[in-house]
Image (tube, rainbow, N blue to C red; front, side, top):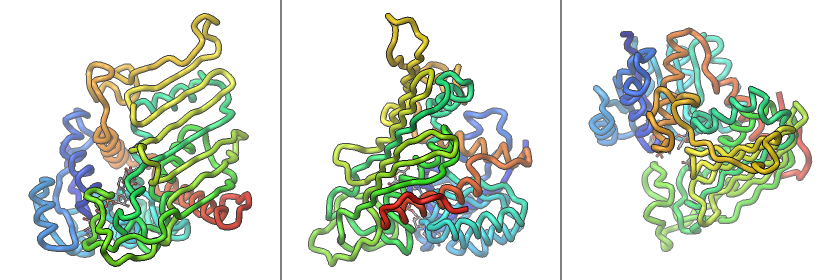
Length: 388
Ligand code: NAI
Ligand code: SOE
């Protein structure tokens, strides 16, 4: 069976998730399209790199991503670093002819994402951006129902992504609160996941009209680069630094196909953890999904008999998208990890087939343009068309 050598840059939260997917993918999808070989992991310090190597099962550790992406024996470059280095690493990896998966958001701005798309297009390599929530089986089932016309023409999409890990004003000033590193706040970090889902389920976005707010203007400075996502709290006596990104976003949307909708994203919603919800109304029915109950898809078909009208709960399982590769009984429990395993499979399948997976850098670029328009509309208060 074909093997592909992976170089993974960044060994934090996503490094852990991707390393787990490389190990597990052939256990779920067998025969695997190709077996991922965890060849080398790159971190900023030698100690961090060695720890990532031992913990995540890589053969080698390095602190020099430039040297690693240039190596002849590397087939795949996996970018799991904060947002400010995605473009530089991806462009170098493309020039070296490597297939690339980059974590989301693809880049800090649409202009930056465009340079990445141009690089991978010129190099003719396979590219993917890691918006993994669309690979939740219940979300893929929603897409199947939509494609089959079972809820008719889509009229309305309502999407939320609510978290509370930064609601504490003393939660540290990690890279996610610094525009120079993150590009934006809730818009780029979590709003883009819902934009990806909106495009996946409904179609292209034409224009937006948004509100953005920064609720916590300064946070305690933190030492070290890894974002602990509020775990352990912050030191309220530490020197504080300015937050220059948005904490919250609400936007109305007009889709090119005629549907309307809304997206909300905040990391300051006490009590909400990974509250991604999708509600879609069509001319023949409705769909509701809540990631905190991610085995379940709520569906309502308008032509059900009058005495049975209402939402029903479908538990994703073997009969549904990705089901045969996963667990043999519905409701055993789909986790975040499964979405990354499926993502890894679909990326490796595309490499073997010589096709482009979805979402790829073109999708990542279009999503970045929508994020740009949301941020611009948040400043002007005006309906804003999506740039091209
Ligand atoms: P993190 O802060 O947990 O880890 C980032 C790691 O990258 C750190 O260990 C840091 O030392 C390392 N790093 C930074 N610069 C480096 C360089 N030049 N060379 C080698 N290593 C370097 O961050 P996290 O949460 O893993 O986020 C990374 C990326 O993944 C971000 O773009 C983020 O938006 C995305 N992400 C995506 C998620 C998803 O659900 N798809 C979930 C969480 C993050
Ligand atoms: C923090 O908001 C975060 O880790 C995001 O960066 C991820 O993209 C999301 O999947 C989980 O939450």
